[in-house]
Image (cartoon, rainbow, N blue to C red; front, side, top):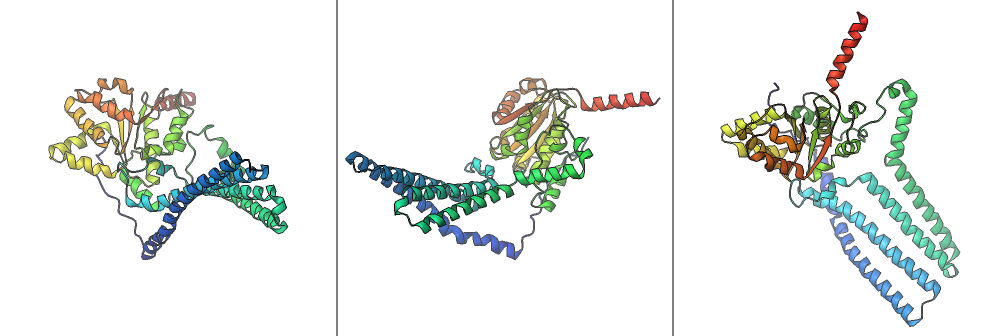
Length: 410
């Protein structure tokens, strides 16, 4: 039986004086950020002012065809600039508000973890291209009152924006990743063809930003073995939800926070997926703690016996993700069920759990005794992604293959 993982706090990575100084300079952008918020209000006023002028001209019969077209383009221009400001304000929000430390707080924005810097840069570039297109169209609509050199420079600037957006898109990831994969195929085609035909989740976009810290988190997590999602044999199970596993690999459930329940017969890869999710969370900067259901029960029982169960549950808040493995193999009495319920209830809508079990949630009464079992299932399943894996035992298949090889050799 594995030893119960003790709670240890990862040492904070050292930060140099220069690093502190560079980080502090973000406050120099604060006036600009609040100015953008004020500018958003100005553009709202400008939109309604232009719209009111257009309505008055149309009602009084003083609106020409050219005027209507230019007025509509102005309205589109104002809306596009306002949308651009919104994206910049989102970036400012991530720079300032997200640094306050709202992790685990009820006011933490759920969408903040979905912000992708590369995608945001491409969207900003395409928004600028759209605004430039509207300005250029305005010039050509009113071509009789637009100087020739203005048309020329407007076209040149517009083409420059298009080229810059294309370069940003190329550097944002998809094209570079495809080029990298093609290079690997050219360098080592036999190894590529030997891999599984369909990966469960895409590989991570790159190495972790803090490799030393990630390695420390991986060691402190207490994984029985280091598994990654990319190595999961997707061809072995008879049926499982690939798309759900791919979503889990993005770790979006940690921001909700939500839970993950992996169910299926023994040997179908539940622990592999749970550890793979945990490894990816460690590499993304989250602290993780792994243990079997029996180990968690022993840990909580020991804390209760020492009169510090509340302190233990509070200390576990430092871990955004806990993994409870092998539920269903050992039955629990009412007292132990009540302890595990307190763990689930304490982390409800506060932090995430990944649970593996050999049976679905509606059969947990076969494992847990006492009245706390239904309440535990209710809280666990409320914000949970459930993945059912059906198939034969992978370990038994390998053992059978080994026996067949030995018989053939004899």
